[in-house]
Length: 115
Length: 150
Image (cartoon, rainbow over all chains, first blue to last red; front, side, top):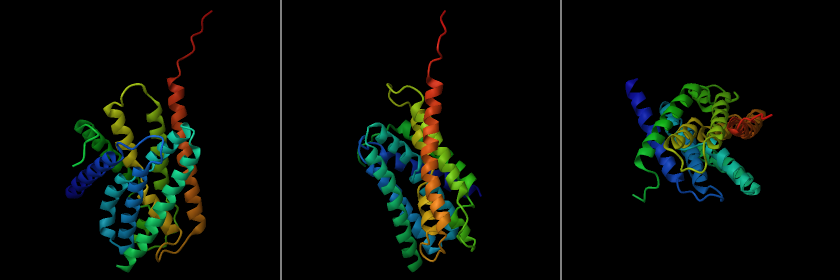
């Protein structure tokens, strides 16, 4: 139990730092490609785990992948784009994030099942 | 290692915020997402209400945090920890995407299209509404009280 708690804290901390570093110098006023990339990658890895049926590892991994990916930043970045008068980019960003992440999860679930 | 764009002390604060957000998310969602349900060998038709709740809560919080405080100053450490760390880790896109894919019938999961569509719509609309609510809350509380002069 102690082991799991320590693993959880360490992995959530590292995952958050990784996301912070990757998204830190994202240029404002443009499509936030860094956040998009990290979200799609996280969805792909989670899909693989689900497809492969690694259920025991799932709960621990949820700490890492959930902390790497983010839903709130997408909302904030989309709102920023709307404020900059770039509503179309904002709409494209939200649509692209969901479509790409679900597609990545879908493909990797299939890949995981084939493993 | 590439150039560091965030000071180490800020990174430590961000990490602490991230652990708190992840722990809260884990508490609130650990057994109820669609794939946890699949792992328990049942059919995935349940609406992932818990993930929706943490995602909307995170959007409310980030809307409030971003729009409260002073914008003309460099972002203080605690704001970064709360916004990037706590809100970022409280919310999740990987579980959202994987649950949605499973509800749409990815792999050998049996599709539940109505649930999938409702989940997609409530997540997007709920997230946007929560962000706007948080923002209005911050702006309302920031507005100086009118001084009544006679």
